[in-house]
Image (tube, rainbow, N blue to C red; front, top):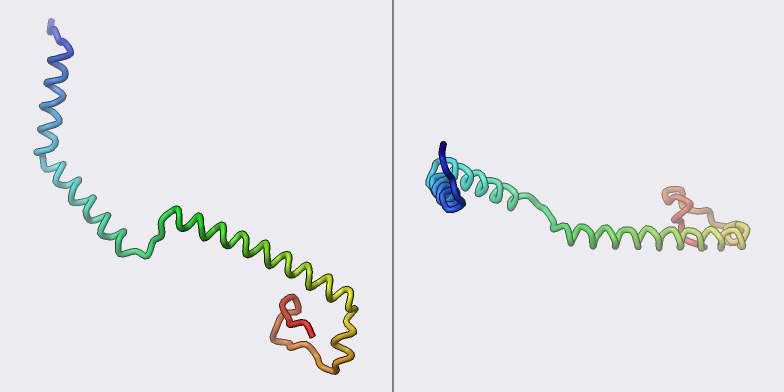
Amino acid sequence: MLNFNSQTLDDLAARIGKAIEASPAKDIEKTVKSLLQSGLMRLDLVSRQEFDTQAQVLLRTREMVERLEARIAEMERRAGGTATASSGTTPDASVPPSIAPAE
């Protein structure tokens, strides 16, 4: 029966580690890693932090647009459409009513 102690197992693990480092598998790993890094560098990617920051900016912008749309709708409701009729002009048909300039 074989008798293994921790020193023998540590030595064996160290030898296996050295063999793997010197093997072609390690070279392949390095080459693949290098190719992946090179390919990813050519892509127009942003960091997770920058993405999260822009997502927060977009959320705040959407909230602001919703508040402004609600204010405009309230102003239009109060005006009752009399501003358009009294000025003699009609709203620009190319601009959706939700973003048409107030007259």
